Amino acid sequence: DAGVIQSPRHEVTEMGQEVTLRCKPISGHDYLFWYRQTMMRGLELLIYFNNNVPIDDSGMPEDRFSAKMPNASFSTLKIQPSEPRDSAVYFCASSLVPGNYGYTFGSGTRLTVV
Amino acid sequence: AQTVTQSQPEMSVQEAETVTLSCTYDTSESDYYLFWYKQPPSRQMILVIRQEAYKQQNATENRFSVNFQKAAKSFSLKISDSQLGDAAMYFCAYSTDKLIFGTGTRLQVFP
Image (tube, rainbow over the protein chains, first blue to last red):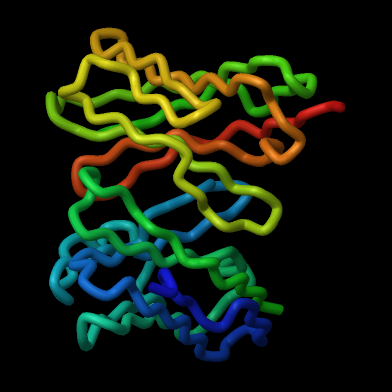
């Protein structure tokens, strides 16, 4: 298996633009997580899905952020409109059974909003 | 709410020596999992070691071992025979369903 695949690896966009980050989890993993990593706040959980259904989105910072999982092999995290404070590394992770089998992370997307 | 605390922002160790990274957590749950993840400059999150709370035996993975003290809610990571490639950020994490991270410890390894 190729692991968790995220794209793009780097994204630079102008303030106010829409940004879409993509994630393909490991096949068979029923759980998918989106994290954001910044120097100030560390690794924060934004949202997670179980069987394509959002379970906990309490970490989504505001309405400008939205996440979808239309099928078991694809998820998106969208920011519209983007702001400079959204600059961070965004990680996607997937798990077969959280805790019991651990979590596999993608390589992350480094987002820079100028 | 569950929290994870890593009180050592930075640690350093000489190559071939042993270093221990500290982690404490707070939870009211009795069944949970604890992890240590390594993040090198490549930013990839790499699982180092995992511990089930219901197991009393401390987990070990080659040069990496943990000291799990459930009553004290402590979960430290010991790295033996440190190597230059061990230099990275190390994150302690707690999980029941979602993974909650500490703030990390930056480990430097000197030759």
